[in-house]
Amino acid sequence: MKRLPFVPSAPAGCAGSSASSTRSAPAAPGISPAVTLGLFAAWALHDAEEVTFGPRWIRENVPVLRKRFPQVPESVWEFMKTFDEREFRAAVGVMAVIVAAAAVDGQRTGGRSAFYQGALDGFGLHGVMHLAQAAAVRGYTPGSATSPVLVIPFTLWARGRLRRAGLLRPMTVRGAVSGVAVAGAATVVSHAVARRVIGRGRRAGLRNARG
Image (cartoon, rainbow, N blue to C red; front, side, top):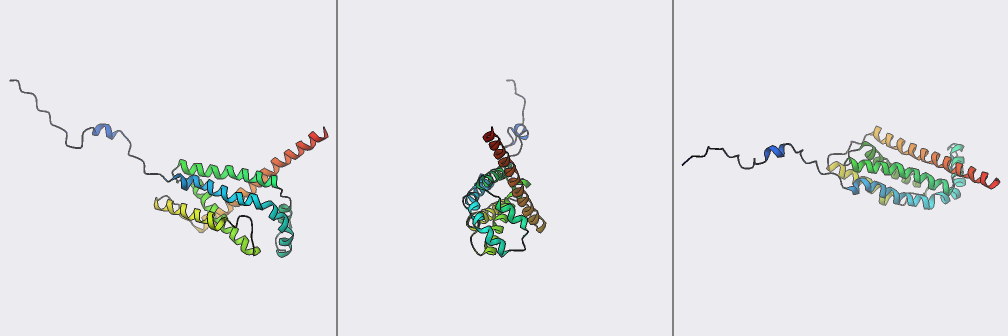
């Protein structure tokens, strides 16, 4: 009888090891979309309050606030007086693009995006500023109703999820100041773009009316 050559068997658990070695290791579990895309949802609910009550509140309260806070530059009051509902809504639309981009970038990177985390921190600080404004005027200001029940709780919850996942960037004083500055700059840009767009629409309407 012809004897077959001895072929050593592979150790248990090593079968297909060469194939598996070519596969990449599974990625670490990502952050829930509720944390990343939820930023846009929370912002939309919050800004719905500002859109609903903002323009009217400004028209009714700027004269009173101007007398109560004479140290505020007159240019600020003049700028606020020129708000109308179309411009306000257009500014919110511009801001929506910025926040949506941050939320999508956060989802794409599993919460690691500096853009997303900066927007998240700015959102939370924005809520704190609303509460400070309400305290300063000793009453309601647009945005102050949803800030303590939505804006600040969502920010703290999302940051907690990022921290547990080891993804949270540390918050420093410099980072907080930067977050407020970025949020303020985004607000100014959104209103500037809105004013330009609305202004063009008005001029086009006047030309059509004259024609």
